[in-house]
Length: 153
Image 1 (cartoon, one colour):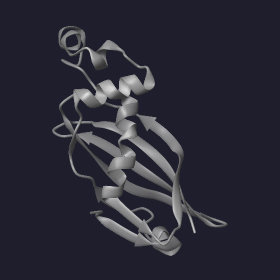
Image 2 (cartoon, one colour; image 1 turned 180 degrees about the horizontal axis):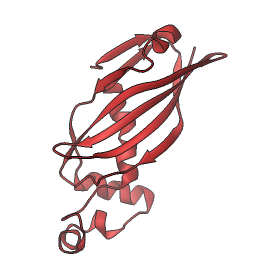
Image 3 (cartoon, one colour; image 1 turned 90 degrees about the vertical axis):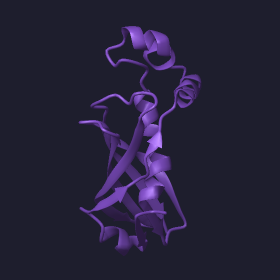
């Protein structure tokens, strides 16, 4: 269940500047990493070869792809905010994506979100949401990004 529920354009605009909450913690597994490698063609050994990653990488073992971390947002964000009063919504893009620290395979991550802006347009609203993905027990975020969504009336 989402931590924040909001209805319509005015409701969304009323949340600008506010922290919306956090998702649940989810484990990042080697199976997820391997499947992501298959889907994207990115088979770099730091992701898909646990033995070599343990021996040779500066991370002490395999890590998730940065883009895998980014791709968790559509699953984690609905745990944070539920937006009603629109017929549909679309992912409109991302801005300023950074991966300050790795996500070790087997670790747990969660997302936190804040609504940076909400700009109405004819037929809906564009929302810029600042998302931070953190690793449980980590000292720095694993990912920070501004994701852009459009909701249509």
